[in-house]
Length: 142
Image 1 (cartoon, helix red, strand yellow):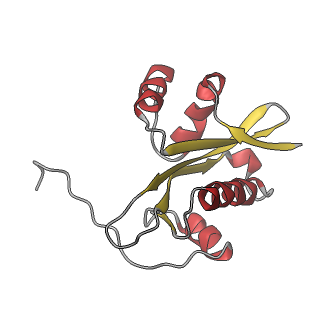
Image 2 (cartoon, helix red, strand yellow):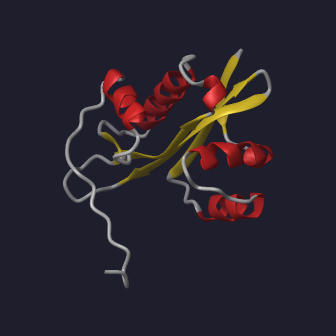
Image 3 (cartoon, one colour):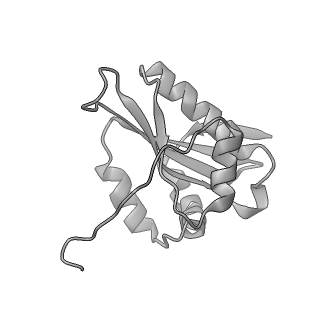
């Protein structure tokens, strides 16, 4: 049975493999430290299947310059390989969209690396539209 719920401190160990699948290996202490720095505008949901953490989605609601209403960003989204293509991702995304709507958000954005073609197909299949490019610079590097 699939359960979507807010993240708890007990879930930290389950986040490790999900972050690693995204290419961000971490330790329990690193994750706890990062979670402690999140603001009340951040919200993390997890998907649990048979007592196992199957996925998570990290969200933030924020005011922006270009609109009066806040926008929502999906900052992190990972489904464990054993749980992909089983509706877990769609369920988490639907829960995230409900969360955003409850906060007055009507514009949800997500960044996705160029190498994540499967994720791009998933977002498009769930109604998201490709709207531009993301650029990145690490200060001090050329």
